[in-house]
Length: 329
View 1 (cartoon, rainbow, N blue to C red):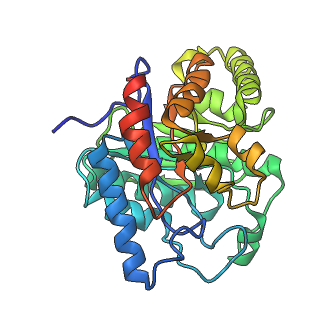
View 2: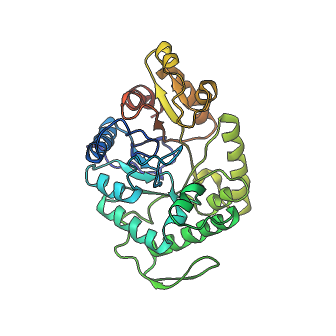
View 3: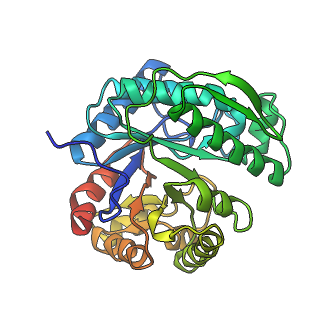
């Protein structure tokens, strides 16, 4: 059995995949919560068998595009369960919503997951954006500047609790005195920190200062522009931008022939027209998808974490693993 992928080895491209958890209504065709969960587990286990480096989940509580009383399996309990059904695949969140849990609690959750998984956590965190969900579950929805400030302080606190015997902190948004986090994570110096989001003046500044890995979206020209902005923010804090892994999380829909792709139409859960959806995601035959991946590799992208638009089927996941990934390893 191969070893766990080293996320910090920037000489290699990494490939993850989202597992189904219900957020995008992808499990709605399956009757019963236990059957939905079993299908999600089966797909996660299959992703490990196929050689994906990592499995990812969203951090949301109800469905999109509208809340629909359909099962959505919670982020961290899902991670804990999947850690016990897999042995080598890394476990990530794209990305955790900082506002939903106090940073001291996040430190305890993440360190526990790293220990029980055998050192396989990729900690994904972001400022949060889904206002409807915030209000629905009783969370305050601060302005962007404050959410970014909270994110920055949270990363500082969690990193300190991972690495120091005790943590005291007196910030604008959070304060604590003598917080302990035992057991510590297994990974040294700590689990990789993934910061998601492409906000050019706020989020990418936090990425430049704190992230081991970044994740932002966009078609090639937009993605390239955000990378250039990140370079500027890194220069401002004296950091080499090449020390940050840059990643992309598109949707993926692959079929063996162009006719099958065309017949499927748009699989966008937001209702995006097929032309726009196809252009901004990994949609096409294996050869066409390879061409799109190469575009991003040429721009400096070294990590791909797609969402499979045909879940709970696994054809796209299988084809991506067997006919796309080997070309970039």
